[in-house]
Image 1 (cartoon, rainbow, N blue to C red):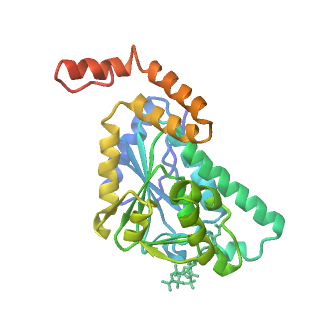
Image 2 (tube, rainbow, N blue to C red):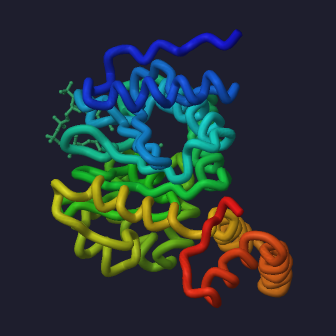
Image 3 (tube, helix red, strand yellow):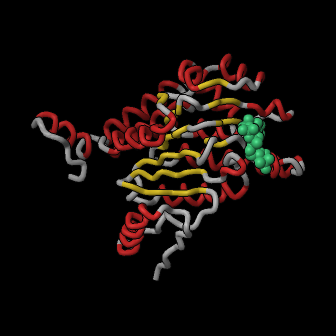
Length: 292
Ligand code: CAA
């Protein structure tokens, strides 16, 4: 018999009914609930969109070992949970995340630090590799490891007051959660080296200009806008969306011709099922019902 996880008191009362219903659905459908007691992550599910808030505002949500434990668990649960279609990640208070936890890192030995770096890389890789889309709703400071978290998300939207940077060199460090690799792939070599070498902090408009974020919204709207984007994605063919993530992400790591073959194979796999449903609906001038 499956045990209910204790939600703790992290959830606002107005979400309680939704959470209770969700737990009951999990219980009766024999699905492992993704809602468990987290100390740093605050997950909240509504209509297929799981909004996860990094909640350690007293340290500007700095990423420590516990964060990675919780995120590891959450991503495994999300991957296997049909109730979750899209993940939105944001931060509580005046930061999305202000970096890896300097207080935890300061006493690390080289071996500890190497292990911490590999662990962070592993979890951010897992985030890239889950089939479900992940949107970063960036508020306030997004620095160092925080920007690395955002870089591992599929889409980034930001509040107009967000502040972006890779300040590791100010500390005599380099990034440890793969910014040296993801940043140059996303915004180009020159922009990446500029941010990494100067530790310059840039604003949301500049981040938009260099392609670091896709959209900028008013501060009070950024999570809602990310959720609206998630809802837009949820209305599309679910297999098609999953395959987009797979082909685009994995294709980037292949040579062009092999990647195109992967595209053709995934394109073909949608015929006779979801693709046919969508095309028939178009020809019959109605909305597709993806469940059939
Ligand atoms: N780690 C641990 N604690 C942090 C933190 C971090 N990355 N960032 C902020 N905090 C803590 C502060 O120490 C402070 O704690 P106390 O109240 O106990 O003193 C609290 O959060 C609030 O921070 P500030 O008082 O500094 O807030 P501020 O508004 O004056 O400044 C800030 C905000 C400019 C973001 C400043 O906090 C800052 O520069 N933070 C560090 C940013 C940074 O260097 N990030 C990179 C970390 S290294 C990294 O990420 C490596 C990697 O890739 C693996």
